[in-house]
Image 1 (cartoon, rainbow, N blue to C red):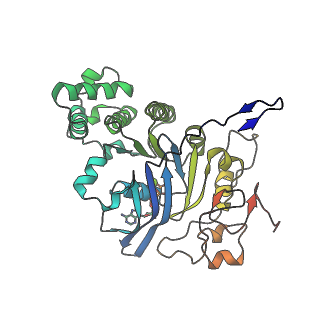
Image 2: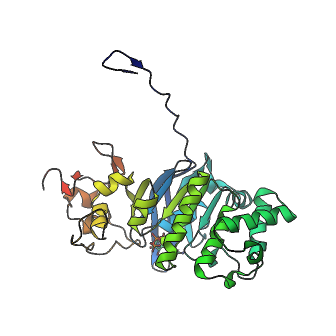
Image 3: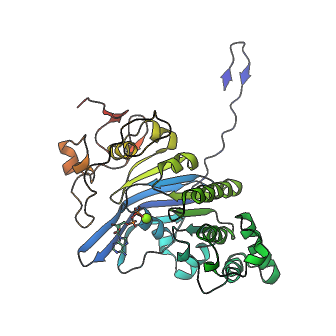
Length: 349
Ligand SMILES: Nc1ncnc2c1ncn2[C@@H]1O[C@H](COP(=O)(O)OP(=O)(O)OP(=O)(O)O)[C@@H](O)[C@H]1O
Ligand SMILES: [Mg+2]
């Protein structure tokens, strides 16, 4: 309740109850058995996505972004993969415990995934019509003309010209950008609640990239769909997502609202990542600073913080103990022992 200076009492608006997340990844561990030993690819990753929210997942190559995403939908092959622990809750149900048949009902229906290479999800030997109507029949229970109409409609929504004719083409008859649109149509035709997009445009040229990202963003907003967007491109994150998870060596090292993260990163790795790329929100001429050193070998992770060997703020404790992802004094979540504000250690060291 607020009382104005002239004594008027304004009751508080009833707050909307926070919506339970569509997806919760909880303390996920995924390893791979290889000839060089066990690869610790994902080491306790947790993140969640609220209905209609767009979450970005960023981090250097090999930090476990894709393996985490593949695990959500049971797409990690075991062996060589080992699902070593954790949960993936979709509306409270643990997807890691479902039978393959139950998981197929959710995959491509309630949760869809799009990949960098459309040919991972498109079958080169089947027409687009077969592939789209199959999904519609399986997940929506439509048949015949109704299924076809739904498929044509999906192609139209993603901007395929003359969809009534193009529906009988094979994937190779489309250009790269159009094929990516077909894949998006396929992943959205069933009206999913959550879309996982793993570098959906990296293989495309720049102008087409922007078109495809705009398309994903428009469809996501119109349908109030949750989105997990895995990308290397921080400008895409700033433009499309509201929250970011930063991963390093199979762990989440920082999680923040997009604006907070860009304005004042709290993990040294996030800071380095931001310093290593050009940014539109900063004066031209700022020196780019590549992140020195290499990520650790995932077959033998250091005992302490995995970023310690590359960290300019490193302390003794960091080499012995691995920090947990916890809120700092201002409630910003980061996995680091050294309090950092605006690019400097708070204690000045
Ligand atoms: N089948 C596999 N066998 C062995 N190691 C694997 C396998 N799949 C993934 N890995 C390893 O797991 C680690 C995490 O890989 P992941 O593909 O998740 O990285 P990423 O963050 O998606 O990287 P990128 O940005 O390059 O796509 C990598 O070191 C990778 O080599
Ligand atoms: Mg990847």
